[in-house]
Length: 271
Image (cartoon, rainbow, N blue to C red; front, side, top):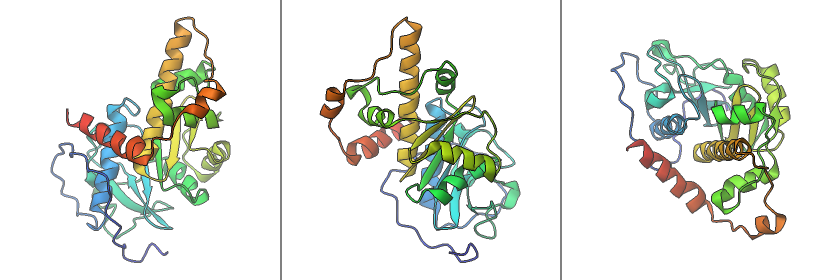
């Protein structure tokens, strides 16, 4: 679909919208309003990343595919304050090359982040990916640098996380800023068909069928990294969950694993 076409009205999101962070008034022309519910969803997800400590400061971003050529993306504005203070106004519609998705999308000094290719290369090559989350969790970086892989060391403690880890969490071994398609292609190659890839000395990239799932996957990987560091720091030895125990873990379903978990994350923002 051409980026010059007017935006189609998307289906309403079934997820609750997060309360907006306070923001100074903006004089920038308003972007198209048809995507307002999805902009709010992405903005809330950015604040969840920050609240979970996965994207401290001004780094990290989330993208959501809108159609074949366009995505909603957490962009940088003239009053940038970091992910913890993201509002729907920071979520802009751009095409795969970073051009405005509608005429006013990048008005007022907004621009895509330098690592736009990190998102767009995943979306170009992974039809199953609708959302891409990029975060900088310190414990994930520390665990990888210490040679500690993300392994299924937990069971019922975090069932989705255990299953994710059991399938493997690959590592992209270069600690670079993924600012062009060549570097992004290397990352995607390392990622393969897995939902999460670690970026050595950098962070992680998580891809999923929804923004909520992409962020929750990152939260699970961070949780396993934290536990692994504590076990090793206490002198313990990490052991994978036995296969018979893994086989016994039930699939609690998306209504619990995603929808309920996401309501919890949004509720934490309001505390």
